[in-house]
Structures are given as C-alpha cells and as structure tokens.
Amino acid sequence: MKTIVADDEDMICHVLTAMFERSGHKVITATTAEQAIAAFDREPDTDLVLTDFQMGPTGTGLDVCRHVRATSTGTRSCLMSGKLSPDVIKEASALGVSTLAKPFTPRELHEAIGF
Image 1 (spheres, rainbow, N blue to C red):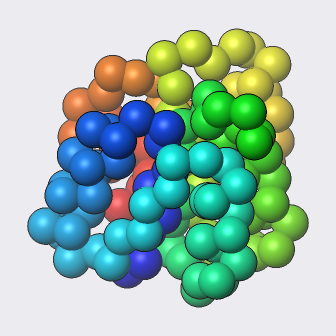
Image 2: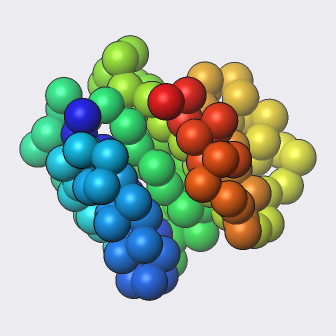
C-alpha cells in the first residue's frame, strides 16, 4: 500500500511513517499542503492520504483532501488535528474524508482509516 503522511510537525511524520512502514506501506511524507498535493499528483495510485488540518501558510489539510477527492475516487483520506471545528468536520464528512482528533491511539487511527 502507498500512503502519504502530511504534517507540519516532523516528529509526527516520523512516528507515523515508522508505524506505516512496519505494516508494509510505502510512505511519502510532506510538511506543507502544497507538498502533499504535489506528492499525490506524482503518485495518483496512492491508497491513503493522512493529513494534518493546519499545514502552514500554503493551505490546509482540507485543501489536500479536496484535491485528492477531485482527482481520485479510490484514495482514502483522513484529516487529523487537535482543533477541528464542527464546520470542518461537516465538510470533511461531505467529501467522504474521515477525521481523527489528536492525540490518538494506534487503534483510533486504524478505525479512522479503515484498515
């Protein structure tokens, strides 16, 4: 499986990458929304995009999810954050994007991404 992990915190990218790689995933990391979108465009057969909501001045994780949804129907997306407003959760849900509140356990992550 191919996974994009996007978070502006390097430590979170590192921990999630290690976890997914142990499960056999090929992981691509990004630290901005712009990088995550570019990574997806290079790897459109990605199985999962896991992105933080707040990704700095170049966009949000919701922007990443919108792009993924507009260009692929087969890629699962999950938006994670410690601060997701009800409006963001509603929009994510309408896009078919799961949400995950930080901090989360490995079990909560697996439940949110569906595998």
